[in-house]
Length: 337
Ligand SMILES: NC(=O)c1ccc[n+]([C@@H]2O[C@H](COP(=O)([O-])OP(=O)(O)OC[C@H]3O[C@@H](n4cnc5c(N)ncnc54)[C@H](OP(=O)(O)O)[C@@H]3O)[C@@H](O)[C@H]2O)c1
Image (tube, rainbow, N blue to C red):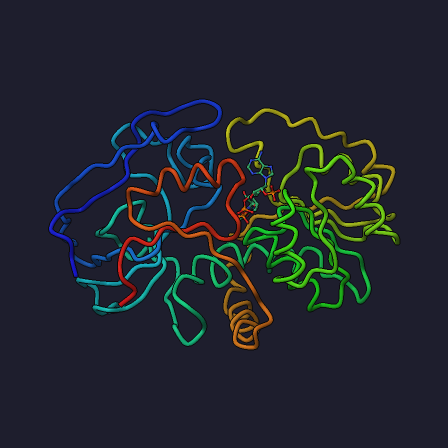
């Protein structure tokens, strides 16, 4: 089960703007030996998340800028293969900060979550039952709980965060309208996730289409994208609407201002709330109960966009950077059992 040699994806060079597969390299290293109190884990599913781009640059909390040769940051679903810590036993399934590599010797401070497989499939622990799910919970249960009949809009609606935000908001009684790029993503959002409507912002008519879909105005907007969508949508907000600021993909590649005009938000007396997922970690057990019940009942649907094999990781990450992933992006690098 343990590979003879550890394969890892390392940084070849830092780059400005859109990264490319040439910024990454495949390297080999001996399988590490866990120190006292540490565990050796083998990765099963690597989680590819947008924040990794900023983390590589040292532009994300808790991550130093990587140097050439460093393993790329990232969480994975993994299994313990050796334990020098009494709290973990061989075979335990975890989510941990392993980076993009096949095996890692880690202190237990890098363990993010212990996996209870009765709650859902392993891969869901980096998706609906992991960080993206908790982000959605932070929005819908904490920052902007909808009231019955509210019109709730969410962008990047086909992705793991947006898809779960919308499904939680619907469960709370809101009328949910997604915004996503392309007809296929919009089809998934309505027919698989069950949103009331989804608007393709890549068409010329999207503002009119969104206006028609939100005929009573927008009460809550969960913003995953910033930029022109946030600016254009401001006109449709009801007075005292809430806007949850969650992500700005324009920021992946540069920290420059993305030109959002804030004036209309003043006129709407909008409440703008920044979301940081880590704030909701204490509420993870409650979210896990809700989400695992919903998964069992078939009420929480999330797509996965999977690739196989460690070598495929940089190209799959580029898909996320271009916004082409449909659902939770992950790379399967080892067997589940
Ligand atoms: N604040 C927090 O604590 C927190 C935690 C987790 C995630 N986030 C943020 O939440 C957002 C959604 O996360 P996710 O994991 O669910 O991601 P995701 O939806 O899988 O990917 C982001 C989506 O953003 C859209 N997008 C719009 N403009 C883009 C651009 N210029 N480049 C790339 N993508 C663009 C794309 O979908 P469409 O084409 O369909 O719009 C893309 O699929 C991200 O912005 C992420 O950084 C924030």
